[in-house]
Image 1: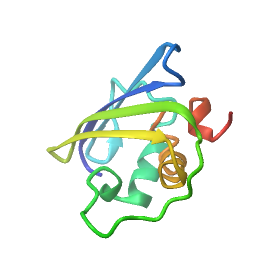
Image 2 (image 1 turned 180 degrees about the vertical axis):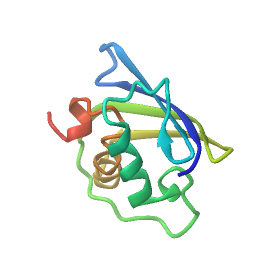
Image 3 (image 1 turned 60 degrees about the vertical axis):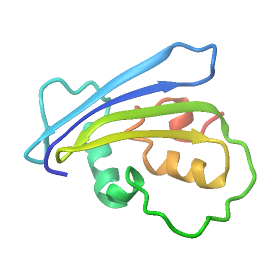
Length: 117
């Protein structure tokens, strides 16, 4: 990911305060203005899982375990290499919990990000 500017807003539950982080990358390196606790870890996760985690391709429905991982919600907005991003991460089923854990460094390493309860 060469250039990106993302705002990540995370809430642990509907009554909890919202945490806001910024991830700014220029020429593949974290830039001034980053407030994410682990920008290098976030970049590593993004490279490992690719842009599809932000821009899913249509396909057959996924079979996901029906388990509830918690009320946490993370909204990621901004741009990746000039492409607009607006994606929500939740912990509402097995597939979403896996997505959340895969991108935990991007989601600020808050309690739900690590899979803790």
